[in-house]
Image (cartoon, rainbow, N blue to C red; front, top):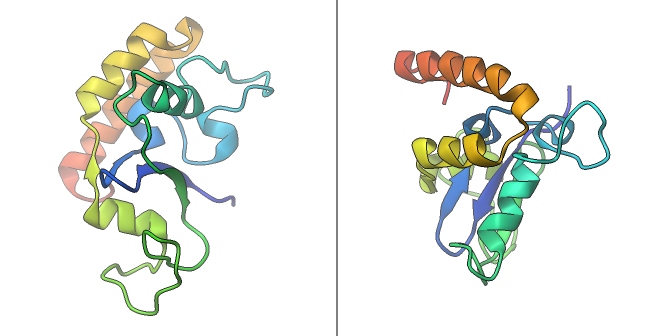
Length: 139
C-alpha cells in the first residue's frame, strides 16, 4: 500500500480529489513528470500548477497535498488532539469540512488538457466512481 493524497486549498477550504481527474490517489498514479507510464498532461500536479498560476483561482492561497497517513494538524499546522473526523487524518478533514471542486468543471479541464491516449480509461474510471458515489459507499 502507499499513501493517498488530495489537493487542498487551506485558505478557501476547497479540495480536489485525484479521482475527479480520473486518476488514483497515490503520487505515482496522479502524475509524476518522470514516470513514463503516465503523461504529465492532465495530472493532479499539472492541475495544481494551473490553479495556483497568476491567473488561477487559487493564486496566492496556501495549497497543500493532504495525505491519509500521519497526524492531524490545524490550518496553521499546529498539532491538534481532537478534531471532528473519524480517521484522524488531514485527508479526511478535507472530505469532511472542505468544499469539493465541481467534478464537471474538473472533468472538462481534463478533457481539454489531458493525455488523449488515456482519456477512454479516465472516462471509464469516472463512470465507475459516479456509480460508487451514488451508492454512498465511497466518496
